[in-house]
Structure formats: structure tokens, C-alpha cells
Image 1 (spheres, helix red, strand yellow):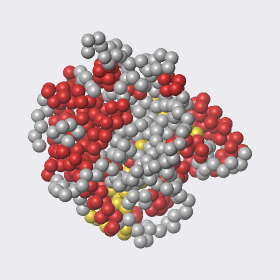
Image 2 (cartoon, chains in turn green, purple):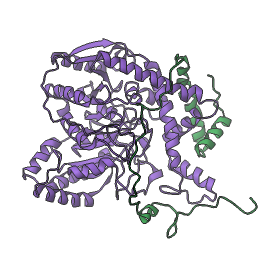
Image 3 (cartoon, helix red, strand yellow):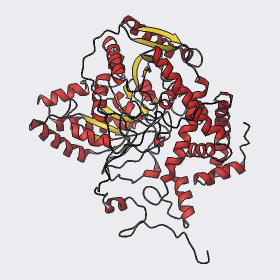
Image 4 (cartoon, chains in turn blue, green):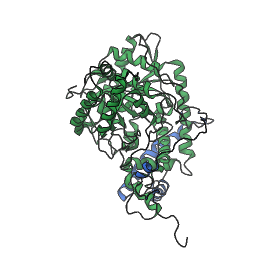
Length: 100
Length: 487
């Protein structure tokens, strides 16, 4: 599969990845993605007809445990890690603005 | 005491010939003296270690039966969560982050009486093969400080090779325990997927990540694997019923053991010194009574592609949790929620992490998902089937870990494809979830260590450890030390 690694694709991938690259990174990653995706495209030569997809090394079965109450983590310890907080909550920017 | 293995040190402590505090203080002094050169440690938890040492001493004095590693100082790769000790994955994104719980393996170390002295440097979030991509700086190889220690558990291997610590825990997603062992002349075990709990291991690629020991010899590593392995209700993929028991003594004879040697691994792209060391190791196994038979490893040209597609896909998903809000780095000027996400992540992650997130987003994106991600999962099924067939013929596979010895600092860092191709012999083991033991087996013309791996069928760790013990009883590569090391 031939892939054009252009500015449009890089911008699309930045959006999907939650990233905003600087120009130098964009230039470097454009070249790197071309090399790496070019190598990855070699998989298209492999005959996988009828082969099931394997997302895990083993066929896991669900593991159940007793539905019993246990102590939670200490809230203050968790909040200590937040870059911006008040007494009992993490502070995040507004997600809705007037008129929206 | 620095000459002693971890098991010997513990025996000395339990015989009351040395106190736990003496052992801990002595190793902390060594770390403080030498780590400005190797940069293997990102944090030393001296105060906590001394407090735990005093507690362990009390338990030993009270006659409590701890473990064959009681009193031994240990250090952990910095992606293993430690309650009250910062855990950063060598990333700016996690600077200032202190876990509110410990990984299951850390709880088990404490129960067994080992003392955590600190956290070890690594490639950022485990993404790299040279321990050069981390925010905490480059790890130097004690055999030649102008060269890399390997990665991503480079801090573990360098700290052991440099005599700073007798035993460590690393993690292996595509070779990250085995390759630094090969570069630094240390011994390591990558356990079967599901043998050791991943609870508290900060995720890179969850279907392949596995915690394992790096130490000076296989006896120490096996004893540590016994401590950390076993079922854990907090990790539903940890399927092993009970911990490994490696106490039975090896017979010293490998009669009846059949070892496969992949001929095509030794043909193109491998240094002649590495190839010769592998062939010499194969001869050593034959001399021990094993049958070594060459075979053609199938699917080798697809392994790197399948691994990096799956690993990057899982990484892009796993690392989406870093949002600049709950913990870690947050851009101080971002006003909107979208800007907090984008700016914090862009400034918090290094280039290699961003590269892999972008690759992961690509292979999972609409239009490319089938051709890349789904195709890689099918290739993974074929690779797993190929190993299943191999283990009908052989007890284990002997192979190189890396095509070269440790390269110069900075030599490959700007060529990601070259770095990825260096994982050619290691990644299929993770795709198939198999166990492997990494052992030193020689030196190149520059005096740099060479290692090999024995890969076994799922949960065949006992067989691998027995075979590795025979090898290390017959050779002394694991006992050699870098020239400047005094221990």
C-alpha cells in the first residue's frame, strides 16, 4: 500500500494523537513515518487468508472475583499529584462556554 | 561483600555475619560514588531503605522465615509503581508523580524481605533500545562509558554490571530485559506472559509487557522470579496458579534436551563476533549432553513490522491517559481543555514517544486499520503457531538477542528504523508471550559483552533455568567484570 506522508496526514495524526508538534518535529516525523510505514507495508506480502486475528498471546477467559467492598485510595494522596486542584477536586478548564 | 551473589549475601545476613543495614549502607555508598558516571539511577530512596532495612533485620532476628533473598538490596526500573517513591518512566510527563499504591511485585519484595534502594533509568515509557530516549539522560555502559547500555531496561543492566546493586527488576515488551543484558554482560529472565502480575507496571503495550529480573547470574534471577511470580487477583491476565519453584538442583547433564538453533538468524546482518559466540555456546550445550539442531526460523521478515504495529497501537491507546489534569506535567499557560491536552502532551512526551503514538494512531485509523493493525494481529497468530510447531520438535530455541554488541552513544538515535531492526531476534518472543533467559556468552574484539537467549514454550521456566544453570556452571562469562570495577 503506497502512502503519501504529507502535511495533511501529519495534521490528521496530531489530532488523533492529542499532540501539537513543532515544525522541526513535523519534518522529522514525516521522514520517519515514511521509512517505518514503508517497512510495515511488507506485511501485505504475507498470506493470511483464513488466519484469525490474535490480540493476545493466550486465549484468556474472564477472571471473576468476589464483589466485595474494599477501601479506596486516599483522596488527599491522589490530589497531591494533580497539577491544579482545590481542597477536594482537580481543576480543569471549562468545557462549555457562554453561547455554546 | 560486593563479590557475593544476592543469594550468598542473604545467607551471610541470615547467619548474622552482616546486618541488613550494613549491606544497604554499603550499596548506597557505591551508588553515590559511581552513578554520576553511569546515570543508571533516577532516584535513591535512602531514608526509606534504611527504615525498611531495620524492619527486615527485626523480622530476621525474630526468626521469621522470609525468603532466600532476605536482606538483599534491590532497585527497580522506573516504570514499576512504588508507593511514596516518585515513579516517572524517565518522562517529563510524569515528573513529580508519586504513586498512591505499589505494584504487586513491590509488595512481594517487601514480604520476602528485599530492600528497595531506588529507581532505575530507562528509555521513556520503555520505548527504545538504548536508554537514550529518557528525560533523565543517557545511561552509560560500564564496559565502555562511550557506549549505550541497551534498553529499555538499560539502568537495570548498567547498575548490575557496574556493581551498584546485586539485583534489579526490569520489564520486557520487545526485548527490554534481554537486550541490555546482552550489551552489559548481565543475566536476565523474561517470564511467560501471565507469570508475573502487571498490576502497577505502567503500561506501554499491555499484551506484551512483562516484569522480570536482571542480575549477575541465573540462580539469583531464578530466586527473584520465585518471589515475584504467581497468581494476582488484581491482574486478570496473570494466569499462573502458583509461584515458580526453582529450588531443585540441576543435574549438570543435558542428555535428552533438544535445542533448536535458527540457522537464518546467523546468516545476514549479524556481527561475526556475535555469531561466533552463539556457535561456541551451542557447542557448550552439545558438550553438556544436549542435541543442538539447526532449523530455518519462519516469518522472520515480518516480525519487526508485526511487533511495531501492535506495540505502537497499544501505546497510542495506553498513553492517552496522560491528559495534564490528573497527574504529571501540565502546560501552565493552556486555557482551553483541548490546549491542556495537546500542549501538556506535546511538551511532556519526548520525540520517540510521540513518534510511536503517531504510528499507533495511524495503524488504528479508519482506512488503514485492516491493512496494518488487523494484518499484524494475523501475523502474530502465524508467529505463535510457528513457535507451537517448533516446541513439538525442540525443548528450547538458542538464539542471539541482538545482531551487534553495544554501539556508541548517539550512533543510532536519529535513525529509528535502524533501531527497530536491531530488535529482530527478540520481538517474536513477546508476540507469542514466551519465556526467555538471557545469558552472557563471550566478548567481541573490543572487549564488549555478548549474550544469547534460550526461548522456551509457555511456562517452561523450570526447564530454561535448569539449562541456564548447567551453562553457567561450565562457563565464567557471568563472573567477568568491567575492568574498572573493584567489586
